[in-house]
Length: 419
Image 1 (cartoon, helix red, strand yellow):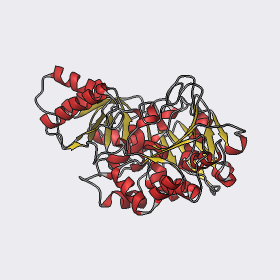
Image 2 (image 1 turned 45 degrees about the horizontal axis):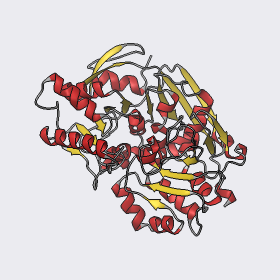
Image 3 (image 1 turned 90 degrees about the vertical axis):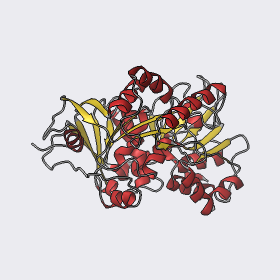
Image 4 (image 1 turned 30 degrees about the horizontal axis):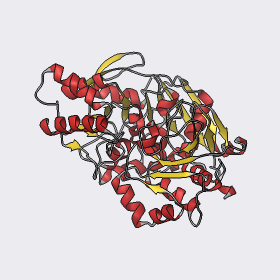
């Protein structure tokens, strides 16, 4: 019996010829990641270990992106702590305001997340890098501290569910719609501690931006990781970015999957996830009349250049509804710059949008887009839990950038076809 991608990666990093689901292994890490919310706790735990330096100053990345630019004194103090830690430990990959981005957009762009890697991050959406064929997963701050100290982490080898997407995509349907549909189908714990392997002709034809979106939300189905087999699209993406050598792993034809789930994407229309779980999905034709107060386009899920292009395509020549706040967050400074060069930012400003420097901001109810009691938002973010974007009696609906843009114009949740 052969091995799946995740099994091969774990075997290689733990010095074994073969591993099987359920086995506990100690694996070497290629990258350890933290942000301004999680790293301060890790810094305190690291201090308790008593080491003078991290295991490898080029394999730790710290990105203050959640409450940065600092929203208050507490967030400023947290960023100061991790800034001083990064300087003291000579951590090469510390990205501050001005050259930072939303961490899960930034690391692939910088060539710090690569095929075949094992990456742990003190942030649940670290699974984004599975789009490159890496085992990337979220951990707690204590595990981040141990990873910075030793360059290793322990794992229980997960089972793998294979998802196969075939057929012809309907207009406006993207990776965001496929992953929302999948989560709606299997539930928020449908892949609990399993590797989700996304395959099929649709995935093979997807751009990296769409792949990142799908892998990003594997955690919303309970997944340990969300992997896509590296192909020519992947190799083209990493070719001029890679900061180090990497290895491509592919599942064997006789690999053992716990389940294989197939979808005919021609039957999937653009999706909207209703409050208060990503599994509460409906096709856009089933949404009904839902007025919104805010539209948020961006985040580590949909803040890449293709997402902004789609939003601009819908918004061009139009204005947001008077009662709607439209906020757009490019994923990185480079994405922001490219959007400017392509004229997308002018389209957004003409539509009445506020365009922000890269930040997680409203996604986690942090700043720059908090909802008041009773308000509703449509967002291209990844979670819509109670109070996720502000007041516990507010509501968040998740969608792709086209729907979020169209809804900003219409003042209610609609298909792009309606505007």
